[in-house]
Image (cartoon, rainbow over all chains, first blue to last red; front, side, top):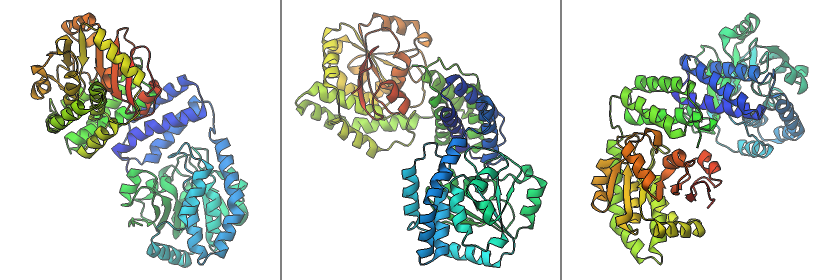
Length: 289
Length: 289
């Protein structure tokens, strides 16, 4: 997905929100804003929004002299989700359709996105989980997704955020574990999950986890490691979580199922759905739910 | 009032909204955005927000090759307000306190601001008028404002937007007409009122109307004509309508009463009031209502 004109003011707002979250030093806020504005002046709109997000967060990490500004937040949301894990696991197992419930919860977990919402609180996550169990979900897409998993021999599951990966774990536990490889970013960016997070929530104990070789808040294949790209190429089904993975892979010719909540108006318009919708979209054929 | 970091993303969004309203040509939208971003890269944050607004709207008028892009909107809202005039006039005259009702309506009229809300509709204006009659209004400030008018010998009333100036006319008709001079912008900017609008709504028939010599969406004294500045200096009371006049004059040492609706979070924080509040604020002593 290209960068839309509407994304530009959002980049500026996000850069300010992120800087304010990391430091109260207003000189740093101004330095970040000025660098981001310079960057926007020369941006290539054919690039995807996470390509700009990657550059913006590199600037923020450099100017705040902090290689992992969201570390505390990441640990907090991993732990919060782990505290919910047992109850949610039971909920899945006691439900009429455990696969559907697990998919709904995996999409609910995508609310933990500090790229979009810098003021997320526990109450909002709990509300989202509750709503996700009854919110509109296209059952036809769900069935297609289920059939694709059954048919697949080699599944690559692209993770998105910390906390959210606990919800991914709940879904993965309903899938054929031996077919699955889970991928994380190679270095910190916003609250996206890295190998440390996969280890911390126990994903590494149940499936093979690999790094993608990049620090974009999405999957920009041309920047990913050769090893990751080969793994991506070899998979006959990709499960891509979240907005960033959708934005970077929506035009890639591959058998991909995107699971996300459409959290901004631009994405919602691109997916032809309402803002806030739970989305299962097959690559090249975005489906409104 | 200086430009806050939060204003920067808002400038970008406003520039895009305004370009889209004027033309569907996406090349122009991109040209406007790129010029505005260049401008933001070198902006002086000590300047007031209308100083940037002035530059942005000069860019938009130049790139769209349209010296008055809001002309149709301006005429529409002047006419809409004129259609309401007789009923509102009666409402004022039949009310327990005609001065208070007229002040409330003059503040309600400040909702017609295309710098803040590019999608304003008639229903919102009607709702705002209705609410303004009962919304919280600081009676102490209202009394101070009334006393200042009685005491003043020479009042300069700084107008803001088209449509809104009909509401100003309703207030002015409750004031000593011979003491009042009404000021408008000298050239089109957003939907701000110019001499053509003052003529069209009949303000020129009841008071002396002057131009301020500038095309900023506020009153930047250093850019205004010498004639206007002398008139400003001579007045012993200034009534300044709207956000733009507040932003440009809030630190000027003069006997000014600002009447406005606080329509954005930055202004609301500066005035220590809630977003959407009806405000009467005396210069140098912003009062929460």
